[in-house]
Length: 444
Image (cartoon, rainbow, N blue to C red; front, side):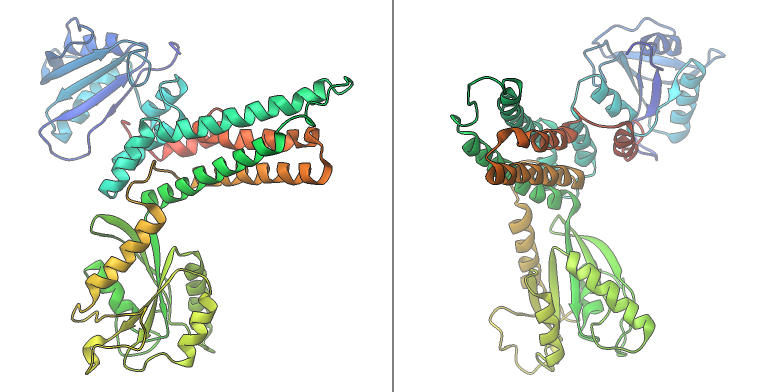
């Protein structure tokens, strides 16, 4: 890809720091680096150089590192300049590089070039951004596993199994007129069943990896004035929601992204659930149920001073099989600290009583859903692709069960392979690449 532009970008965060890094990548990277330093740059060595402007004045002094294609992160010639971390200095150096023939890099363009040049697959490239943005140590460890190719290897094994099955099935199509029963003498169904189970296993791990990456969605639900907003404020550590004695204060959804003991959580405070003739409150309740039904876990708040009411029971019945933690609020207003509910937790958002036990229960949900030792980190698009692959394989099994004809499975197997290949980028589109790499930071 030697005909591409040479790109440059500041790779360190904005602001004042001890060191600022600028990266160049492309066919003229070495030439431009030597023009900036007015010296010869040696490959694979760390060199102290002056960085010089068009009038011959020294802009800064720092280190230059050079890498020659294909032995670099992007697979192209790369120069990395490490100067002082002042933002003005960095902008001056970048402006000089643009004068010398660089183009300003787009967000994620360095990683995109690494992918296009075969240095990374798409899942590994995404893991770079996930590693940088990790919200917890567990997420960082899982992102590193993805970057090292653990996730990609699992997907590749599934793709190879689908390809083998497709080859076997399509051989029957190629030799349809021969007196050879390829499918009747095979263990086709057993192989398909194993493939479905393997795909389901990777999907379950990807779901856990997605939760670890994106954080658990916790919805706070209950009747008006049960203490939902007070609990949100206690978890967030500040007054994120208005709290009054007036029932129905919260009319819309309030979201807070917090970390509890290093674990990322999206906590959602919802409108009080009750029958209402107020159209504004009705809309708030409709939105509340939408958030509750999409949550990974629900904190069902019950006013401990009144106990479970018929309205609470109606809400619990509608919650159905959702993962619910029953939380009895306003413990500070009770004379006794006991509640007639073995599974429930008694808390006070005002005094903090019971909060540690609640956090333990919430993080227990996180551990159960995501796992501290998740094999890899995953994104929503990975989960979607695996779900489509699993559905295609299940459809292939249904076709075989109905017709006993392996030939009719061919299209379903092709769709399964295509869905899996989207994860690593073997099958992708320019639009998808644009969305993925456009979300990266500039300089990565």
